[in-house]
Length: 126
Ligand code: HEC
Image 1: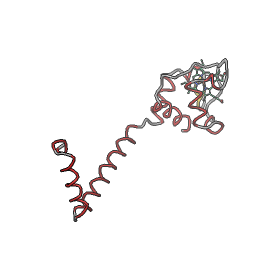
Image 2: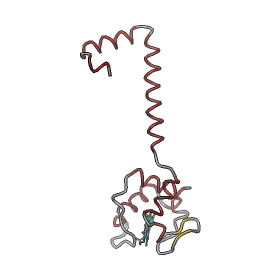
Image 3: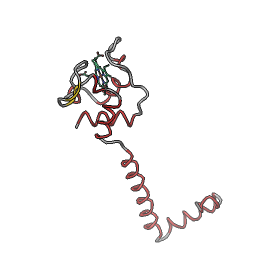
Image 4: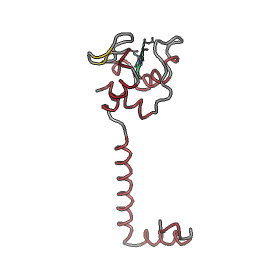
C-alpha cells in the first residue's frame, strides 16, 4: 500500500534497486509466495463434488435423473454420463439444452455460474 504514495519514478528506482542487488532473491521469493497464496485462495474457492451433490438436489436434477441408483427416471441415468459426454457438452446441456435438442425434455439453467456447473460435473464424475 505504501507504493500508492510513491510516484512511478520512485517505484521504478526501488524496483531497479531490488533487481540490481542481493535483494533480488528476496524479492523473487516474496513474489512467488504471493502467487502461491493467490493460487491456494483460488483453489480453495472452487466448489467441490459435494457442493455439486447439493446443487443436484437444489436444482431438481434429481427429480428427473438417477445418479448411482438415486433419483428419478424421467431423463437418462447420469451415473456414467461423463464417460459418454465431454465436459463442454454437459456444460451446454445444463445451460441450454436447446443446443442439443430443439424441444428439450429439461429446462435450461443459464443462471447457474460456471463454478456451479463445474461442481455439478465434478459430482457427476464422482
Ligand atoms: C424436468 C426434468 C429434468 C430436469 C429438472 C433436468 N433434466 Fe437433464 N435431462 C432430462 C431429459 C428428459 C433429458 C434427455 C434429453 C432431452 O430430452 O432433451 C436430459 C438430459 C440430460 C443430460 C444428457 C444425458 C445424456 O445421456 O445425454 C444431462 C448431462 C443432464 N440432463 C443433466 C441435468 C442436470 C445436471 C440437471 C440439473 C441442473 C438436469 N439435467 C435437470 C430431464 C431433466
